[in-house]
Structure formats: structure tokens, C-alpha cells
Image 1: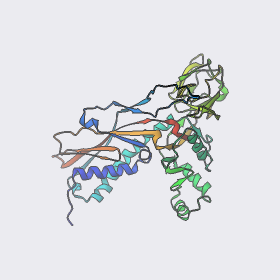
Image 2: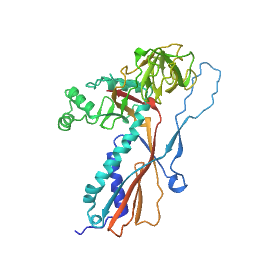
Image 3: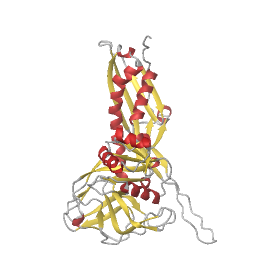
Image 4: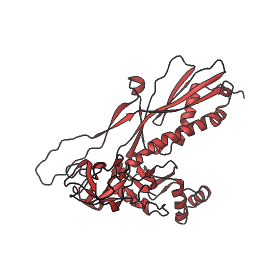
Length: 403
């Protein structure tokens, strides 16, 4: 059978199919597609507003107590344009689609998908709940069942959209530690052949991804005695101080607890037995006086529909870092529900006066391919682009497992 010259649509669809299959993390979270960029002139950097679920407080007694509905939104900026540029000849365009895909599209999409995944996985450092023992690679289900328990406490939907994403080292130790527990013949066979936990276990769909982020801790440690500086603090910042090592640092993604500040049930507001975990949201360095304002998540809210803690910390409440070692690097595996994070792609404009241009959308991911012709060298310079943004929507629907 004679080969058919590949069309723009054929190439674009095949590239998008390959990219989609390689996006492990992005493929398992909430994906949205915004076509306004093609129709209404939205530009790179446009901010989208995404609504969060409403919350209310309960009334006790017969007297009606109306409450306003205040919708909470998060802003998501679609500003990241990434692509792969290739150059192929007219001879290569006469290949079958399978050959063209294997020789050109597969390696190009592998590079693009890795960079998109790495960027999106930075959202893991927004998550404030964490289990595991830092410096110890999990070899049992305990850290993951504890993560499941934390997610349950924050009312994460108990459906099939819960996932556990771990790096290869964690996967290897988990398979070895759990090889006698998965008694389905097909699962045991798959684990033996592939070295992977397959399917669902402990309430999660399991994925392996070596792009899991690494968190480098700052130099502040618990023996520097970090303390809350002032009582009754609420909101997304916390004034703190410590008695030694005045210029120590805290890094974005580090987790800590405040003495006496407990997590509450999201609906009843009754305190759980566990302290609320918080995460540092920006790199911070102590001043000469060792007093600073620390940006944190979640915001401390002590009353109303959005209450998330039992009370605000007292003055000089002890701050305990989840990982007490300085400057260490820890892998951050993640358990999450798909609605904890979102990934948005948008249509890029279709240029005029080129050899060809095509744009396709598949499962919430938009891709554009533009090709021109170099008459001197009989080459077709071609660019493959995606325009995207991502955002942590509901960090409480996820839990890190630190290694």
C-alpha cells in the first residue's frame, strides 16, 4: 500500500494522543479547557476565576438565623506556554503515521510532557497535610492509610478518584514490603513482572512518577525554639520569633504545627485530636531580631462557616517543624483526590500565511501545531505548543507522604 502524506490534523491528533498518555499527574487531576482564547481575544496571562464549594454554619433551636452566601473563588492565570520545535523533511512526511509517531512525535512529546508534569507537580508543595517519617522511605501501607484518614477527616469524596503518586524508590520498597498482601493472582503476577503496585490499593489508584517534587528544607530547626509572637492571630500570616540562629530560613513547602491549635471537622467544627498542620507558602529568612511575618496556609480561621481550627495560638506557642533537620532534601509523594488540583489549557491563536496550522482538543488539553516550509533546505520547521495554567483548588483534599 502506498504511503499517504500526513495531514496537519493527523499529526496534531497523534501528538496530542501521545502527550495525553504521558501526563500521569495531569491526567489524574481536574482538567478544564477554555476556548475563549480563540473566540474572544483573551491573551496569555488572562486570569480565570474558579468557584469553590460554599460552606455554612448550623442553627440550634427554632429561631431562624439567616446567613449570606459568600462565594469563595481562586484566581488561575493561564500564562505558561511551552512547546517543542522540530525540523523534518518532505520525505519524512511520506512515512506512515506509525513510523512518524515513533521517530519524531514520541521523543518530542516525552520531553514536553516531562516539563509540563514537573511544573504542575509544584502544586504538591501547597499541600499542608502530611504523613510519613522524613528520611524513611515507606515500606508499608501505614503512611498511606494515615493519609487516607486525614483526607476523610476533611470530607474528601470517597470515590474512585483518589490517587497515590510515588517515585520509583517508594514504589520499589512498597512492592517488596507488600508482596505477600496482594493475593489476587493477576496483581501478584503484574507486581512480579513490572515491579509496580497495580490498580487500587488502600483506597487509592497507584501511579509511579519520578518527577515527584523534592523539598529542600531551610536552616531553621526545632532546637532554635521557634515561637508564636503574639496571641489571637488569624489569617494567612503568622508573626513568629526564635531565640537563636536569627538569620535561619524556612522554605516554601515546609510543614509545621502550632501547640494547642487543633484541626476541626469542616461541618460540625468539633475539634479532632490532631494538631492542624500548616505550610509555609514562600521562602522566608529571619531578620537580625529573629522576628518575622511568615506566610502560611491554610489561613487561621477560628469562627464562622470557614472555621478550620479550634482556636488561634497563644503568645509563645511552640512551633514544631514536621522535619527537624536543616537543609535536607526529601521526596514529596502525594495522595490526592482529583479535585484537589486543576490544570487548564487554552486555545492558542491560529496564525495566517504558514504552510499549515492545526489545533486539536482532547480530554481538556488543547494543542496547536504550526509548520512552515524552508525552500532552500527542503525542510519543514514545525512548532508544537500548549498554553496552560494550574492551581491548587482545595489542598485539604490531598495529603503528602514525606520520604
